[in-house]
Length: 263
View (cartoon, rainbow, N blue to C red):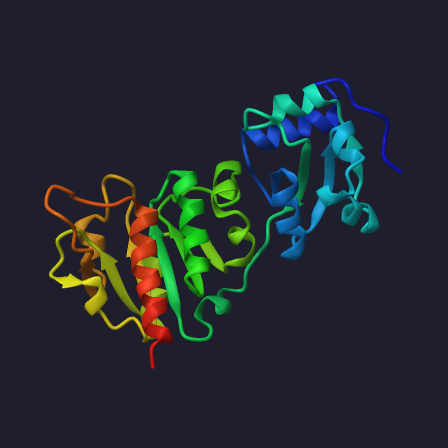
């Protein structure tokens, strides 16, 4: 049965939520909103406990019934207290504490590797969009390297819209280590570099391949790009130097999807 209405911002449960919001750490992450909660449950993510406004607590469509059926405690929290924890202008009335999924690295290489390597992408919104794009294009997995943003931070989760729960990925490794793992498995690495001679659509993306992308603004350091098998570019109209990192990923990864669909 749900606990009584929590009205205080100093309540231990509320403090625990706030601490995780301010500094994500350990094995837990914070989910906001019924859509993200449903995505997490559908992806097999383990939810530990949840908070709902009185309005949401009566709404069976918010994913709360599934939590209760699994024995997950659902605390009813005053609307204004939940709003103080929200990252958006209007609180969605649902927060959940969940365990971060852990992926088997072998899944990144099945069946024919199409791997995203995001090197030093520190903007969480961009990182989330990268994961969403990669999953949509049929990528098999991702390496998030050289201090890339936390894929389970609030902004990254909103950007990925559940893809971070499903797309196998590894983080907290160096780009050099990720490239070594790819090379040891026979995966060619293509660095996305503005001005490279090889247009992306002329590269053979049917074979096992990884797409290496650099941080916003600075792009890939020359020494890192030099580690790749080849460099590719996206031809653009005069006056435009580069694209957003998520857009770049979308162009190349969906070209890989097109090539792999073509007999």
